[in-house]
Length: 390
Image (tube, rainbow, N blue to C red; front, top):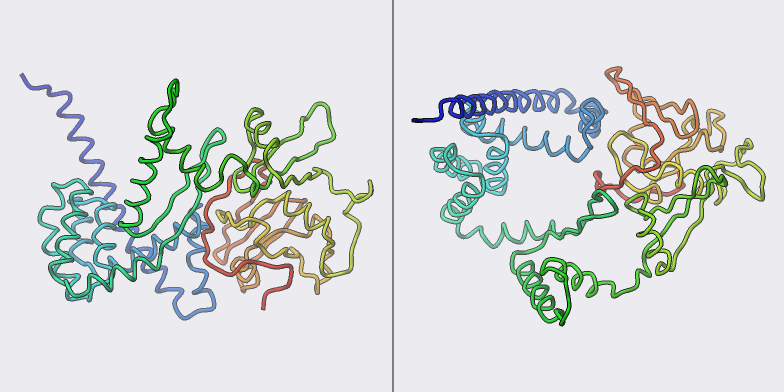
């Protein structure tokens, strides 16, 4: 006897995937139309930011979605059709797009045709293997060129996780990654001693950390936020991550060599910093306060650290905006330039609260977030300074 209830549920699950795939295809068409609508206008450079603000995505996510959509809609009609029919999902469509990105349109079309027949029955990892084989077969002479192009994108990044943890990732060549991983495994095996209760993965993580930093975190920057209140205890934050647990904070404070103390109320020699200032460049203590208060660029979804941002006058200095905490905020160079574009406006109704209005009239409020986590920089633009952008 077959389990008809389970069969019905599985069929319903498959139906929802097909509906979702059709919606993803429609979204790709819409994103392509948005890109084409802004093309050639003064807002073209900031199309992804406009989409990101409206959808509450990061700028990087919006840019990736737009780029994928443009490529699939204009270069891979078969992939778009399969997505619309629910034969594949967005992840498989993205895999086909990524694998054929460096091919000529003719070769990309050939690879697409060869893989789509089986794509609906394959898991995405199998599809990627199939794609690699087809790409190598159709353009063997381009393999080295493609490898060099991909290698140009090698990088390292950190993603903050929950409960004082984080993930450190490295994108590099397959040979380098395999060599590094084998070396880590070798060191982890050698590190095992009698009575060592750590698991193999734990030893691997430990030897990886020890190889780079040793036992001391001398390059770590710690921020101790002083509240001056017995009812509200001081908070220890790790630069680039956020608040630490008490135990983790105690361990780190005993090892870190750079410790920065920041008061929640801006003062200088026990005097408030919110006095009106008619100098353009804020003094160092005011810079420190605003950057510690806001932590990151104040554009929705942008996590570039405040230390790498311009310190922007919300009301421009030349329009009688004061150099005070309630009129200053960090904006990365890209979003500093965006703020100056016709159609975009930014207000700061109270210190640390930023209200954006987009060219379509959408309003987004960015509230202070003491525990805001910082992710990899979403906009590959130059680091900021205190000087106004060109």
